[in-house]
Length: 138
Length: 138
Image (cartoon, rainbow over all chains, first blue to last red; front, side):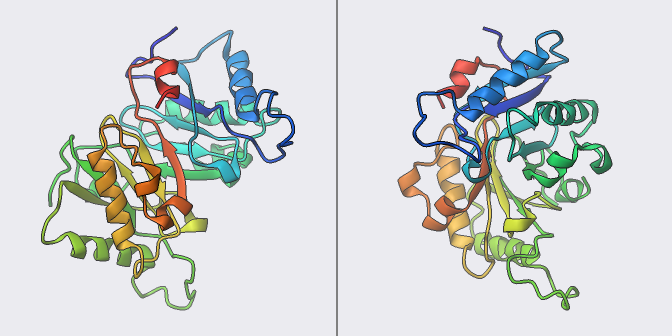
């Protein structure tokens, strides 16, 4: 099992997300979050593109699941929600690639997929050794 | 201006949050997010308690503002929302203290203030050098 290296972009994928249309009677089936993880891994199989995919149990965005978080050392962290494993894998990966390419992890608004623009749940600055002024300017 | 040291618990406070009851005609007044920052700093003046308070412009939780984020090196990051600067300063600080006291930044559910339990917007694991199994066990 691969170990995350410290410098790469990490995409956390909540595998316990039930999505927006869960049938409570089918708990034995893979959850939408688990299907999202599988779809992302499948899409990336040929070329990992410097992305580490990490399953995680609960990103505390249950009301607007499925959910992923994109982060990297020294960059902003973005939580993205309302993801359908059948519809939004490419949107997630597009955003992750933009995040990886931007020095501070702040993809340009106009370049973000529309679904991501409308379903960004939260973002958090990197933990720095810097002044509040520098924080507020990012 | 103090510089954040790398080991302490940081409370990011969004100073651009408009809160839930903004009067659009009063933009010249301090925004609720700015008032929340002032209230937190005022409450902590006597004893900083190992908390670094950092203003930040937009945590992308505008629909459920006011918003803060609590994090520390090697710990989970929590985004908390629907905060009223007149009502929830103690709830925020209680959660921040619990987060600081817990090795992984995972306060026990039963100890979290009720408003925080009901208005946790998202959480994200620390960026680690570890296996997916370790991530999922936290």
